[in-house]
Length: 557
Image (cartoon, rainbow, N blue to C red; front, top):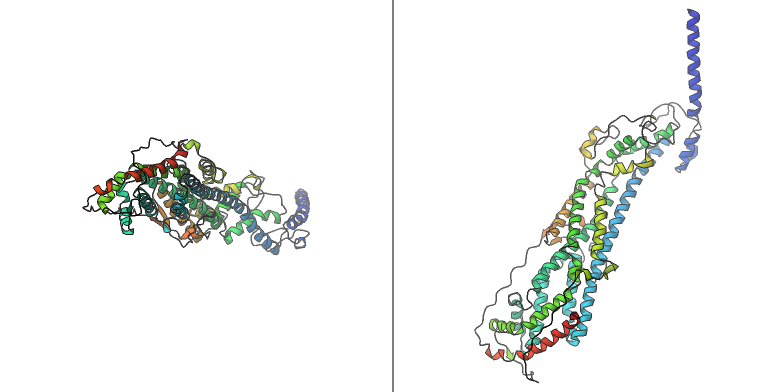
């Protein structure tokens, strides 16, 4: 019996020696670790030639290791950089995408405004000659105000008031031409201007154009503001610092295999997901409001393609103003009579001399209808439909960006499946369940310690920014004017820009619904005899008819 027992002991001893003898050379050699450590830019002399037992490591498993405490500290710092790298790369790509789209839209809108102004100017110079040149500042100011409104909104230009003033000024100038046989004081012309809307000398054009301009400009500038906001939010959220527990978990996942001599061993995918969901818990909470914002942007983009199309408003604006002038020409006698009834009969002009008899005339021409299919692509070398079609695809692709970051980071060659992966302690299958996204789910995260009672203040502030911008986008979608109440320089020079000098200016924006302008006062009739005035209006109607014909002939071809 003793002999048998001695024999068994000897066999067991030999088996243990055989196993330890085969494993120890692999553990003792740290050549691969030295090479990998050096490839990260560290001093290879910091790595021991052979593994040691009992290294005082804080993160990686205790026992036989190729790491020292100094190495672990350096690898911990390196892990923070590497855990941020894929997030930074994805965020930078997203920022670049929407920064480019913002620049494209902004350039397009500004060039379209400039092209419309140049087109009207060139046509009016050919048709009106010096008469237009003497009054060109009216139209120049009109386009300058539109550009200023696009850049700065109702904080700089009250669009309703500006449009009302434009038509009142145009009426005053045309009224003088129609009634050149009279002298008009400044007080008399103020009376005429006050009643522009009631007189409706330009037909329904001013009302329709006001609705079209307001909707198109509000939609355009709000959409561009939304595009400028996106890169700023992404930048702020993506640069939130990793917590100490996240850095520790990243070190354990990425570099503890080095310490065990397994430099090629990749983390298990589910293990990586839990680590990244813990590290990006606050960012994931941005996702809901981010998606609401993107949906609102997508909806406003569709408005820009349809009823709020900036291009279809601005391209034919010279035609619409021409139509208004024609209406004034056709109704000049009736308009003048109403003015004389309400403001009194003016004094005859001593300088006026009749040079020929007046004959009845009428205008029988028709406007060439404006065809949206014929829209030129002169602004920024493209069209609004092309721009919106492209940006809608990008908006759709950006949805759920924050909640899918862990999956994106842990995809592909960064992780390994099954049993051939690092599970945090050894080369084996990862057994823990994958927890959900967001801060509230991190209480049960097995790999990252997260304080779910302390949400990140930067990310919470960006959630508020997105929520406020979504409200503005929805208001613009409904055709309501919105204001961005910020300290900004009002620029009327037409240079490209977002209308916001500081990348963070949107944080201080406040949404305000712009109230409608009060109705103009009604004309108070003055009891005078208009018969003396009626006989001398025919000659000036003829003069204005000639001007309208000259203005409209290029459009009739």
